[in-house]
Amino acid sequence: MAYAGPNKSAKLCSMCGRYRLTAKERYIREHFELEEDPSWAPRYNIAPTQPVAVVRQDADAHKRTLRLLRWGLNPPRASSGQSGPPVINARSESIAEKAFFREALQARRCLVPADAFYEFKKVGKAKVPYCFEVNGGKLFAFAGIWERSRNSKGEPIEACCILTTAPNEITSQIHDRMPAILDSSGYGIWLDSSLTDSLQLTELLLPYPPATMRAYPVSSRLNNSRNDDPDCARELPAPEINDTLSLF
Image (cartoon, rainbow, N blue to C red; front, side, top):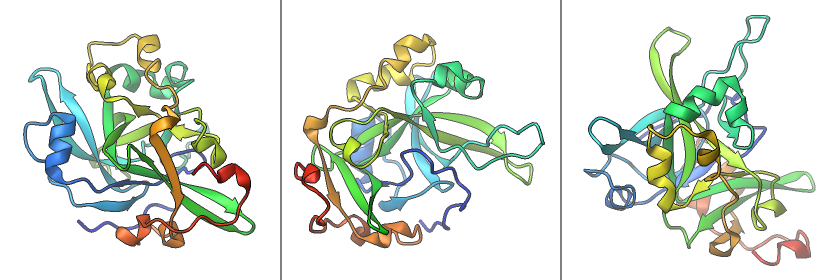
């Protein structure tokens, strides 16, 4: 698959703004209980506004499917009539209270498959990218929501947004937020559109347990979304930052 770079105006003020999905198609099928292998080529540097893989559940057919959606919801229009950048993240703590997200939380939830995500640590004038893995790089899923809307040409599109939560002990040393990673036991609950209780849903969106996570620095090539190859995720020696990163 070939992808153009992301829209530079994509909203990157919160996490997560880059991630990786390199698992083989049969592993994606098995992990997410799909009926067939999805069509997916390894991606090492997935960025906002690009097509991303999401898992949804068909309530009528009672089966899960993988589809490509744009990463970034169309933003609400301001009173001036102008719209802002695509919304790539939503805070899980307040999502049920925000009119913009409320309906999607209740009726249009999805899983966003990944096997790592990235965040940047400012070191002097440089931004050092770190890769965060779960269980040594195994598959997991971000909690997501999706919407149907239209692009600037009036064409129908489907787009998604990744939810974020408070950081755990690993991610807090790099960023004050982390993506909401769901335990696999919560996939069925999150995808069940018959469940609309906001409290029950948001209880799934807790910081992921740090014991099975690790982080390591990777190449600054990750900064450019046009770079999308194994070198983007290759582990580098830890830079001399401070002792608080020693647990990485």
